[in-house]
Amino acid sequence: MIEGKDVYVCGVAGEYCVKATIEDVVRFAPEKRVFAIVDLIKSVDGSSYIEHDPFEGKVRFVTSDQVARRLAVSQEE
Image (cartoon, rainbow, N blue to C red; front, top):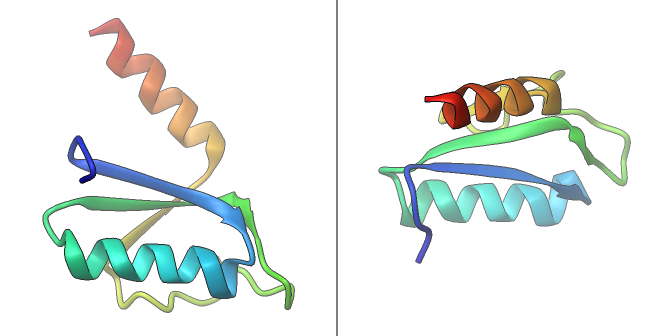
């Protein structure tokens, strides 16, 4: 069970493990907003989600700086 409405994903093997995690969240928890933290995802083959969106627009691509700013604002509220 994933708590909250937002899911942030990062990790290594972006074209395998990270991709599978994102696909599972999109499939099994479609009500969640999925954010891929692109500067914290490394792929074995060197590819990047910035260059190619394999998720058909169902995932938002953000940087770790954007996430940090968003979390800082939400803590101030």
